Image (tube, rainbow, N blue to C red):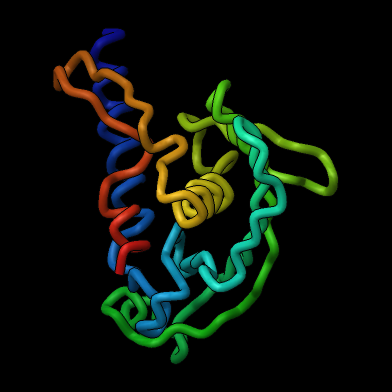
Length: 173
């Protein structure tokens, strides 16, 4: 029974991960400065590459700030946005991240308090922030931060990570 629950949980997790990015344009309105990092219920979030600001470079510690924009369909039709239609920016937030390479821990600045972002945490706890932090680190250093971590699935006898390779490919365009 434990194995069945584990398998079902894994399948659901993978489906949510795949669906969260499903069909949203990889770059907002074709602008490669806006890189898709998350999507949920008609809203897509993009890291603004041009806003990236390395505030601390003292390996193994790093602090990076970056603007994250929220976008929805220009015409108010989620299906149109999913199909590559134009998006409009509905909000811009500056996110700050602290990384410790030695401990492989990423934190988000939440009103002056560093909040840990668990690479295996659920969307409610890590959504938008963790993928934005991963993309910011990748853009700054061309290195994956959490992206090198892997977990083993007993049922499929294979490893999986928190981000698919496609996630990083968006930054290379």
